[in-house]
Amino acid sequence: MSLIRVILAILFPPLSVIGKGCGSFLIVLLLTFCGWVPGVIAALVILNNPN
Image (cartoon, rainbow, N blue to C red; front, side, top):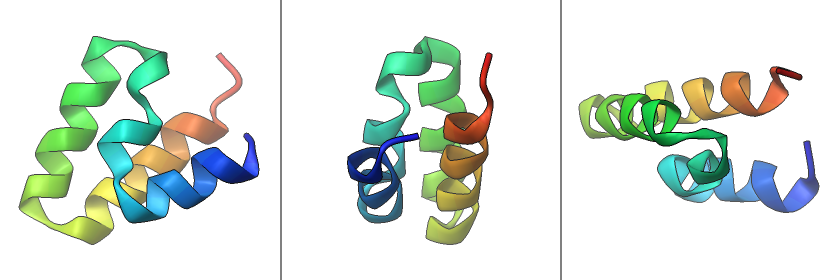
């Protein structure tokens, strides 16, 4: 997890997980629309996952 991705996850969560696949992007996008905090948490969890 790079520092740039973490900062991007805090500022705009869906953009930070775009390299992890379309499903991750859509999940984080929907959670961000529901609220900024759930989107940030989901993005950080996805970025922290080694798989």
